[in-house]
Length: 385
Ligand code: HEM
Image (cartoon, rainbow, N blue to C red; front, side, top):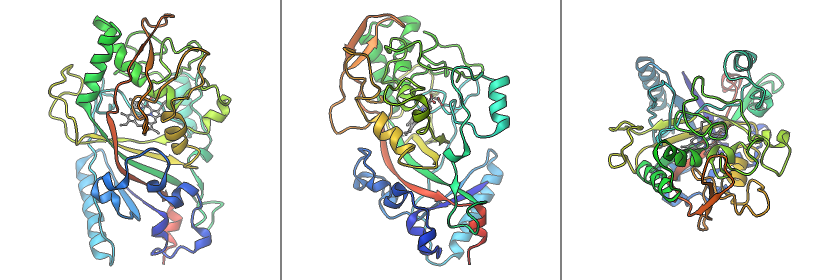
């Protein structure tokens, strides 16, 4: 499978008439101008520093078709005049022993997604997780918009595509998990809870708000919310998944408003590991050159991706917490701030009322570059001169 997406600047060589260019403000401004506390573009990987007009995604589970598709793309680009490849990123999928896809810190990823297709929604409702506590069904208007550059925008749709290369310092993260467990005096199996507090799920995907230990991974649960956890006594407020999808517990807007910020994610890990990600050792873990190629499809970048990163993950004042509970803190996986990270408040026991205040682990994810693109409809490509 291969797909391509074009950024605002690419619309000129493609002779897209100005009035039909997709008008999302963040797309037009570009990621380099986004207010997300990202590192300065001068510190991004070199191929992200230039103006990037387009990205081509090539993927297949089988290596043969993937290699052939990649070769065909290279051939087309070589034959085209004035097109230059700035850089290439290679994804390498990772799986745990249950066969679930994981990210480099060792946690199941991609478990919670907005679902758009009736069969997927029915499957989730009837045969997988259930949908009594969290409704995974979202309208198509949360992922596609009329493609104004296509011949008939009432019938042809496109999507804004967010691409970010996020390097993961696995050694630092694993050290911090251990140090946090020590500071909180979590012993034996309970030590796993330290990492689960940072992510909001145990490594196998068990949501921390639903039980105090791992083991609930068949299928990886997604039918939960934070109603029984208003004080962050099970899953702390800074846990990544609680920050980026508060499931009605954010306290600033009703759940219908919060749901407008949810986006379809399709991250792909990159970098080759020579160790086993979940082997419990720290000394052999990589500190660079591995991470996540974060990708997401949005109908509105400011309302979805930028809101989740900027207004939720980077904001030490989100969610609204009970009086006297202190700062909820940054998202401890992806939060970025020029200010020191506020101390965090962690339940000494799962669901208990005693909170321990301790220093927040440092940032172990570094943004290395990225851009906003628009993925047009096939009708748009067919209409090109
Ligand atoms: C290296 C960076 C990242 C890592 C290691 C990471 C890791 C994870 C993990 C382990 C999960 C739990 C699995 C799941 O629920 O699907 C998750 C969920 C999620 N992540 Fe990330 N993530 C990263 C970057 C991001 C970014 C940049 C965003 C958006 C700003 C984001 C948004 C989400 C969302 C919306 C969920 C689902 C939450 C839910 O519905 O409960 N993640 N992530």
